[in-house]
Image (cartoon, rainbow, N blue to C red; front, top):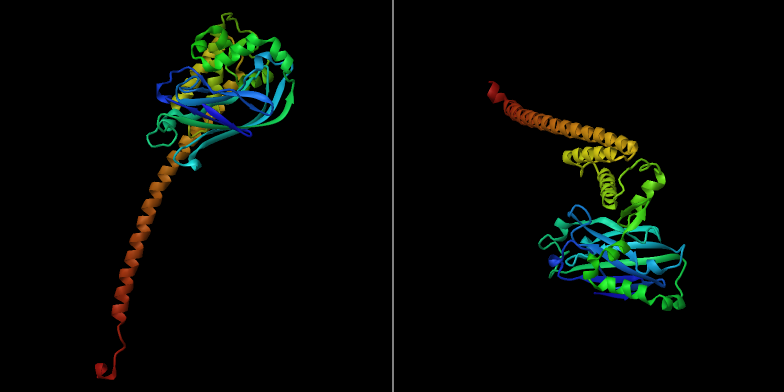
Length: 321
């Protein structure tokens, strides 16, 4: 359910708690003469910990070769109790045939989204607002071309509205892109990895697509883990990172650069832990020091009072005689 206003589109996901792990879609909307739709994963893409949200070029399968859409994108999960607490994430990027969808795997932790009285899930509804500024459009589908491809168009629109089609392989493939022979969810990260490290999978032997996809998910999960702040990273995360790295190396991926980054983060994490421990020690020392200062100040006040009493008033002549 949604409504369009200027460059904004509002989408209400109803009966959120009853939704399974499958993705759900908004209606198609038009901004900048381009067709779009939102795609959400109520239980996350991989680890079932975060709500995932993407913007998709709705008709990307029937656009002419070489099409591109340069956009500024703002995705907002609305806090229905206080707008100031809403979660807003934004980015600027090019959509194209290799990347027909873009968004955030970790838009919002599910614990926060489902928190009682948290404001994100009210009456079992989640409200989303997307703002799309279309900066540049390369390659448009003319009306005459749309008329010549009615079956594709119907299939795309039916795919939006029918949950049954989500289970069909052909429909699933429409939302998964091919990156150097690996089928992955739309992600700029995977594209950048192969652009920067073109030899990463040059000796990868597995031919089965599900094995290739599984390895790609492990790779992207490891990268996502390393991108967390030191405060968010736990010791278990680093152990899991080691296991993921060994799995990738055993599978034939060239990930020396990731191994180096992981080691750097381990060192920083250890330094952080040492720093935290030292801070706790200093805090204890400071409390002891403040207690001593307080005791000394009290002792000084006592001595000052005695001194004043002893000094008293000066003697009179009668006191002396």
